[in-house]
Image (cartoon, rainbow, N blue to C red; front, side, top):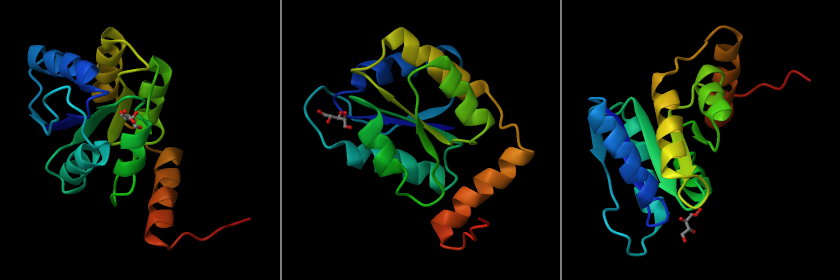
Length: 151
Ligand code: RB5
């Protein structure tokens, strides 16, 4: 299942990604918002992040004006690795190298077409593992307060 959410600044690209997920038979839960009225983005970022952190959703996609505010909020939830993506390369690499579990995008930054393209890359690219696994584990150690600096 894919958790998806947005604020008013990201609702246009969120709806485009939802159409893509419907057309491609992705199971998803839309945590809102559902209208263009002004709302507070941390609310929606938290709902998506919690769903991913709890293991209910495999991945999350969150959209706001820039993608930045929702990424900051989502990354405060334990277990979340949320990445702001604005191009295809970053959407691919944040899965392959960072094992990102949430992608954040900005409706005032990228087009609906680009958002769909980035979502399709993010949702279909596996983690490379190997040396990257160790690095991702180091991020988790920082989060847990157990990180041991080597240098
Ligand atoms: C809302 O105006 C805007 O601040 C929000 O969508 C987002 O860009 C915050 O990071």
